[in-house]
Each structure stands twice: as structure tokens, then as C-alpha cells.
Length: 129
Image (cartoon, rainbow, N blue to C red; front, side, top):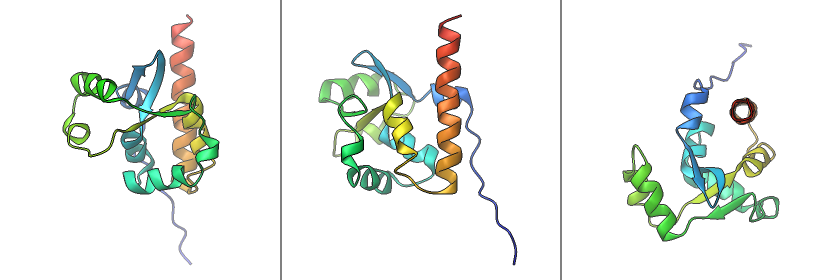
């Protein structure tokens, strides 16, 4: 029997930082960006979160307002995906992103969660230097 290994797209600090926005005074990542990083469709990602809503209080995840979305679109490198989405996206704080590791259960999710947390820690350390 052949052993298979999961291939996770390289996640660099730069690629993560380019997907972090400051909204409501906190650093967040949007659901569609997280879905991309976790290598699942946005609908699968959102469904997993919805099934576990009790794990995501308002300080872990919140839905953007229309004006917040417009601001993100203005500052986004590739805004079409956001601009033409029928629903307002959800934003996940660092705590919400950490909680995803218990909701998205796959080998890829484990590796991605570790890399995301290491990136947030590295960013925080740099700010305090």
C-alpha cells in the first residue's frame, strides 16, 4: 500500500499579511481568503463554521457591513470576488482563526492552522520590537 502525503500550498508570512485587514480596530481575515488557504470552497468553509456557530462569538467572527465591505474592496488587490458576491462576507479575528483548527478537520487544515498561527505570532513580535 502506497503512502500518500498531503501537499499544502506554501503559506508565507507575506501571502498571509496581504490578506489581513484592519476592520473595527482588529486584524481580521475574510472567509473567502481563509477558504483559499485551507484549500476548500468558500461554501464548504462557511458550512463548517455554521455547523459550529457556538465556537464563534462576535469577538471571533463578525459579518462586514456594506460600508466596511466597500472599504475592503477599495484596498483589495483583487476585489471582483468580493464586489460581485451576493452576501456580505464574514471576518475572522485571530481567535476565530485559531478556533478553525477544531472545525476544519483534515491533514491540510492542521498544517495550515499551524502556519497561520505562527504567522500571526511573528507579526505580533515584530510590532513589539
